[in-house]
Length: 371
Image 1 (cartoon, one colour):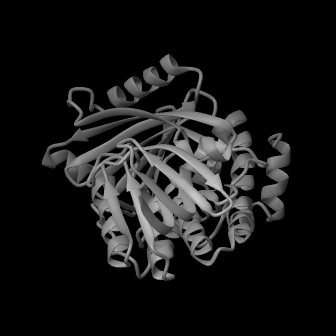
Image 2 (cartoon, helix red, strand yellow; image 1 turned 180 degrees about the horizontal axis):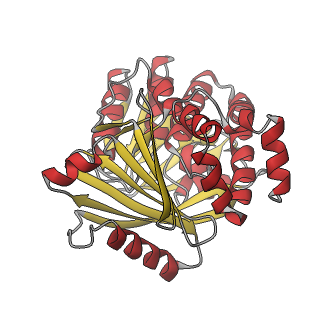
Image 3 (cartoon, helix red, strand yellow; image 1 turned 180 degrees about the vertical axis):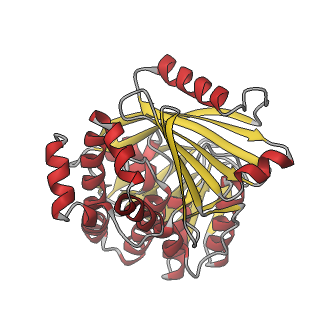
């Protein structure tokens, strides 16, 4: 049996942020990960300013591209592009990015065990007992669950979700001519399915192409991806990866803690509901969980998440509701100078959706749009 102060289940951005924070605070920290780094992860891989701020001083970001130009379309039509002097988004490949986070956590003092599967979690007044697939056990004072929305820790805590979306993604190797065409530029397409959108993210010799839409219409979502790829002239390229995943967004009253077990990142259903951006939420919630686990202030973690991340999620829900009903209006607004400035400031972490919604013109517009 292994004993530690803090056990972290899952070695993605949330779990490794928790491990880094807990180890730096002096806690004996153990990370349990079923895969082995570096490993592929379905993800757009765009780091906005909020993510970069959370990483400051921890790692050197392994960026494959710096996006300074964005092209917008509405179901392939009404296209326009906008440029920005400073980088808006840094593009990373998750195997390299997550492995960099792993090394930072290990350097901080966390022990990382890979190819380990957690089978059960039990709590008693003295701590938490984790049973592994090989029959061994780990005991911990506190457990941070960061093994995804379908993982064992989310089930243990009882996390509930009221928004579930299906994301489909292709990793396409592209020749040098296409690399140059897409270098420093991403594309966002507001899709034909209510609330959906598609993207092209440049990553050097690879393009990440994907779509996301509400779960329950898989064939329409697959058709949207096929049409999107055809429209871009990329249909003849065999993908390196062809994958799908579900993103789950928590209900307002969903628990973030059960006894000595906290959940962070995807396991807690923490993401921005409109864009479905989750990396910044994983980094921030993981760090908050690690600090709370090391100090023993578990209620403080719940309070911090509600105060620091809750307002962004509430604003995102309002924006998603309006966008679902009127995607054409959103497309028109982003084309205006104020709309583009708002988008750019959000990407750079200089403004948040909740702050934007406090502006009188924005509140009035959302009221007219029925949100």
